[in-house]
Length: 139
Image (cartoon, rainbow, N blue to C red):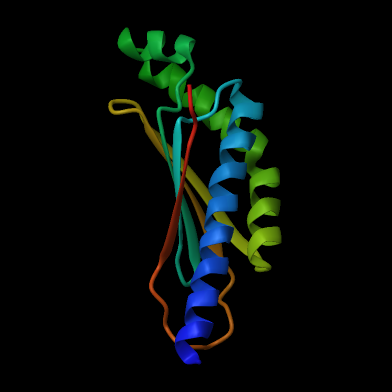
């Protein structure tokens, strides 16, 4: 009986992680004009981490290839400011928990990015392993 409950919880949590990955790619695509090719969401006890791969637009890639990292970083920072409210609302809706903070960073070689949401502490309960889900775009 307890194993069935744990499996049901893991399945629903996995579904929530998958929804976050999918929706974060959609939000990034809407904001930047191109979404990452891959996203992995990890839901921890008091945080959500979304890792993106291959996030740069063709124009940003040209700038990075020519050493203009600072210009691309500034544009990416602007994207994060624009998508912040929608991304926070997504996490709060899917997890039914308040987001206390949102942090974002980009790395250009290799092309990866991280979106970190810090959650209000949840109800005390048994410790659980982090849960992950991936979303990959077909190109």
